[in-house]
Image (cartoon, rainbow, N blue to C red):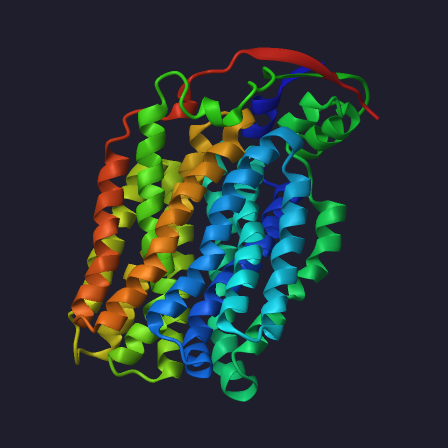
Length: 446
């Protein structure tokens, strides 16, 4: 029986197989979110312990982001050649081991080195988790599944904020990093249950595994006999070159611009929101609760936006999210002694929309490139975006050290949202819209 791989996946009904992928990748992203958020929660106490300036703390925090930039580019392109599964597992081990190692750090620069090494794994996980979920998602639920999976990132951020409130006063900031070693417990589950990307199974001739996977997706396929699966041709020599083929170079650059801007916003806020709110007169506990509010709002906005993206398209939802984020992040600098409800609402809408926008951007990137270049497309967008993520904490640290007005700090993180919206608006077609020619390869039944 001859079947089209994209057709089987695209028309599949949401079921246990999809739940398994979303849960496993969501767990990986959850710990990713925890790991990245704990630095912002721990930085006020770390500054006090090591006697360093905010600018130095920002430089140390950027170490993880340099690692994430390199990890996203390297593991994203690698996965298009060797599959998604093993890079995801290897990256989880990498970021877990070196996150736990921060507990033993004796100097701020040692913290920076461990954070850099953990960042390699953190950066490598994201593009591959997004690509894997996207490749197994039914067409009508693609943005929703990616959004729900990536909301695990916000759950991890909430956990970091809650744990920070309770653990930092009792056990010190290092305890957050010791708990960051827990993802090692998830590795056996990934080894046993995480599936490989379907297009990669075809390219490697793993026909029995592919047949079982397709039958799990579509129970109406015959239980016995041969399946001939129609797939896109073998990938070109360089998946990265695909990002600039067929006139898609400008779209790729515009997408990279949007990633750069929104990741500058995210990591600037993640690193400095607690400290900025302390500067505004709020105690540490309240400042960490702002982080928790940001992530809770991000989950709600992400789920609603994912649904709207599948109905109306990802790009318009993404542009609106960028603009909402810019407006309310800027507003935080001008609230002064306003009602606490208004402050929390601005944190929720500004910060929540910022995080949701990045999740929608990941989904948009996954939809914009063919399967043989999907991880490379997401990975390079995230990698270029990490340059913005590196600049964000540095910028916040420099502004705080310089003693500029609070309004300037928040405006510095709001303007990039407007630039990102303009960049997305200038994209007229998506690079993945061109059809790929097909080749057939048999997938044998069990």
